[in-house]
Image 1 (tube, rainbow, N blue to C red):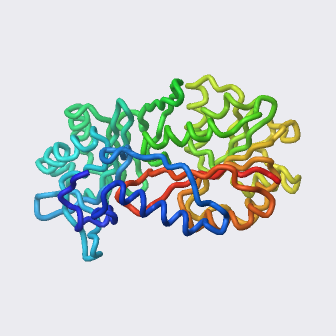
Image 2: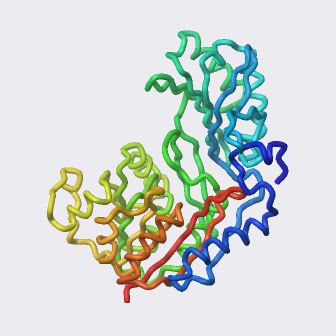
Image 3: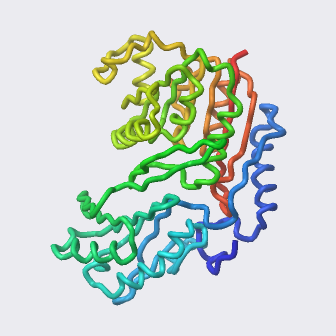
Length: 369
């Protein structure tokens, strides 16, 4: 990837390494970090070298009547004005300078604008415009013209007020092992930012779990059903939980889109589900679900950067198989120190979601002794 902001923009910290050198850098780090677990060989799943991000956020820099996108500088000395970013999906990349030039000429759209968040799918693009102050009464008509001009979905956000001019989601589809899965990905909700690597992650999991035709899957931190829906065809039933109300809403939509009828989505935290299964608490959200009827052998967790809490770590030890998707090697290492007391590492993979950065996404499948 070539970028005129390499060495200046703080987003790409491995800008001076070729892709093969980045691969070695990350591989060496994983080997060193997990050497004590016997992880010396692991699978590597590569990313496109550029235009791989389907989700991107930028600050807006004002200088008089002129505006530009902005990122934090690599030297941490203020903001760096930019025009576009070659990490972004081709549609976002092409739209960025055109949208900026359009809004720069329209005071109502640019006034008090402090950020733009882009979300793209294979066929659609959505832009959320973020403002410091309440939107002016003429904003909606100006924004509708803008959306029409670029054939995009547009949202305005200001002081906890959301103004949607159309759907607040993009329609996405993922192709995994010659099968297509459909998703509505909502603005403001978490989604995997690298579509190509995400497809590889799903494929990796489905290829490495077996003997599931008579058993059930429990998933914690299910999001909008990214993994849940493809995996549901491998199990009798699936129970998936997530604390975010908007994510559960999207997950139920996506299950319907894919005719996945063996999934129950419930809005519960990992800790609350643990309490429910142990019989320590009752939840109205579980009133139509008979927990004791499930034959869980597999649990999938995709926690935030903080990893699993102590209660959840102990809880997942009860399962024969643990599938752990991690966005932080440090917390993964911490959690594995506990999990290997009852399980062995069967598979380990590194997914390069974020080329040119030190960020590492990992996948681990553990089996009970």
